[in-house]
Image (cartoon, rainbow, N blue to C red):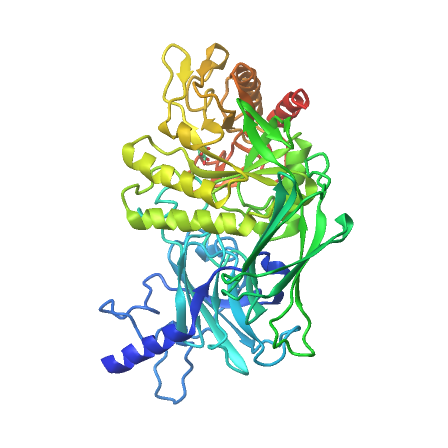
Length: 609
Ligand code: GCU
């Protein structure tokens, strides 16, 4: 086995770190000058990670990331991307290869591509960023055999500046994806959804100028619209122009020494976005290049669609644009209907939103992790309010600082990606976490960070109600002081007190709006029987009727999102002939069959308009 000298290895890695680094994901990535790397990628599973570690578990300098091919007849290379099968990216591996349906481990992916020609820049004028919309769970990215970095967290985007690593002609992009569950991960080892592994969202090459708009924010403020922008580097004196044609806005501001600029647009009164009027405005932001701007190059322009609204609380009310609103919600996973795989297309997002609208919903709880950006964009376009959440789910490793850093990173990346998306009104930091000091420290840190990163939205989390005594259910959670909306899950009628919902009383001793963020029960679509026979549609419909009557007695109820819109895959749901690896609490089956509970909910929501 060839052994590289230690010096070579050190030089090799040192050289590499100087050239490729992770950079913040530019805001509104799809409006940029992008080259898609989606499509068929070669892949193979590597359960023992032998493509990265030697047989003494040492890191291999000549691992699979080299995408090596035999040069001489004597060469020993025991892998070949070229001769391996392909799978579609974006997409999970579980539903594309029956051998990988339950697989949890490493899969190596590779695709090659030619040096990209930018549509807006001449040679040497800009940078190339390599963007991943999400990779579940751990990604190690290699370009032309060089390690760019490692990313953990399965639901948020990340990117690398690869300008100095790209080569003319063919480039080899290799990604090691590992979806193994670990105690210290976020989420931890147990969760009630399918552990879809892979390059589950878009992979793009983004061409940007040396100096570019990295982030911007447009939102309704006290007296009009507040606009702020930040460049990827601290450059002063660059002119940024915001245009909103329909509002006859065209304003130019200059960046300060930090490369930032902001502008309150007073006396600008846009139509307010709401579910009944999902008004979006076309906006354009241009950055005039610095003084050495090349004569033939155009200012880089960014287009977006922005909705303007306010969201706040007043006592136990949620106010949208200053008026009380009842959140007629439903929970949903980031899983397509019919095909039941990680969602990747606009059509799949539209189906779920259409189903929720048909049930009378104006609100979707995107459980339990950041969903595909497509869904957030479609909800904004179609007038569906959103609850977005990070997967701090059940019993996280509260005492592990790395776990907290991971959760903070996922929270920051979710807010960074979607902070211009008006449909999102709630950031949720957790789901059903057990009470305790370490948990309170962990979650209060997240709540404060969410508040400081985005003071324009509401903070919440799905709490748990301690069990009832003589039918009194009292919500007691130290986290109540850190959230704007007090939300809790309850399963009266399913996990407890199958027939006691009518006797239940609820006490929520906090002067804040209350959302019942989950309730429900399972039913197999098409299974019929008595109302006390579990798994029948009749049982589930009765549970919904009794729970909804019970919710009507909860003081300060500002909304609910039953669990859930669609049956979804889960390795925890094993009952043959009924569950078969599906959680059956949907009001619609995984094949689109509406269950009787669908009409019970729809009817109740009609009374909540
Ligand atoms: C929990 C959890 C969900 C889960 C549901 C269930 O409340 O939040 O993720 O799927 O209950 O048991 O079906």
